[in-house]
Image (cartoon, rainbow over all chains, first blue to last red; front, side, top):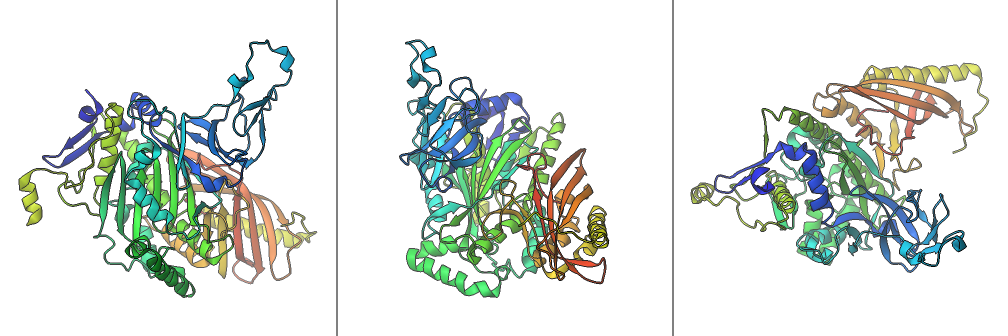
Length: 444
Length: 170
């Protein structure tokens, strides 16, 4: 029996959706996830702005594998395994930098930034059969980018079900565009990374990143802070918009901004002195993009790219990458994305970053309480002998609201289908419950 | 910032050390409202990201970049029963050492660095935040001889993998 039958309950007739808690605790399921999801899906590795010049590099760990994400001497973006092809030592031992050659500190084998082995000390000691070209650095099977966001895929293009990145992102591209087009000169990752681990299964962070239902309780102190700073004035914030299944496991919650946005929705948190600049930015966005410009300014987007990338465009824009580190542990990396024209030292950039930090990150007024919630869920799963299932049915029988759970069900449906080797499930574009009686109730 | 210390007179050094120890005690005892009283009205409190200990709030993503208003809001939040990561409060123990008064100090404002180890214990585990404080202190009468106009904690840890969050005040 596959995971679609045994690990999730997706009862469209009754409007019931459940996930078996073994999904969060089972070593064998984690092993299946690594093989069937992380070794097959497109995984975010980094943003092009982190490696602006030829021979720039940053180190990343993606699905547990050490990578060098870099631009080679000719300006081509690449990802290479950070291991010497000779004996295995870590080749690049700095987190970021610029180099023409990676020289292994163990025996001095040296590689250029395209991965080619250029120096083998004591070449004469090797036989004639020794072919240097067999020892070039390797990388993930595929590396592709979309508008500055770069992904790797450990599965080759000729494997069954393989898609190129463009087809994989599919409907999610519209929402990535809504983030990127807020900038006049492109977006960049701001220096400074939030790197932390949480004592819970990685999928709890996926759920939490696209969960509107928990905000009034988990983030009560944040909402109080917003109100006390004169914000949270938008009455439509909790009732307009909702979750959307974007296909291929991706989803988004788009809703009216519940509080201030640097681009561009002014609330008193930003201060009166910033008001003319933010309102002028909003006007310019509408001038340039019409209705779409107003949408970019006035709405929040919690965008999830299957299986482990979050782009939340809320009080600021965060790019968050989730890595499993065991069944009950995960590693998080989060960055701030900002328009290039918001230069270092500018009031606009500080405003954005301060807004980011009110809510987000290990020292924010909200994210620490999410971590507490996730860890307490994981602890609760120890009681699986008596409580086997978690419920994710909210909003199944109505058109999605911002605090409903369609987007979380979207994740789980794709997750189960991928584990079963069955591709991606059909996209939900209508109310999920099919029972006519239920529909009549909604209508009345 | 120069790392040269000035030849401070022993009485002043003792006064500064006493102040930093008293500040640490207020935090360890969760007397956050009293701690907040130590700050000037335009004060700032900041913690850079672990991969950018040189980070600046108008150029890099920090972990914490608090204006005086934000710091007041942070204390209010931590005093609430709804700051879930700190309810119930963790136990903390601060060790402050290697106190130095920098050359850039003036009689009106002293710049002081100190090393810290802040242990946080909660839910069965203890983690330590290690790093360096930079305080700018303005001489004042009450309550402890100085007010803090600037307070920065730079962490040595390369990540917060052990800690998960920075929910306490460092």
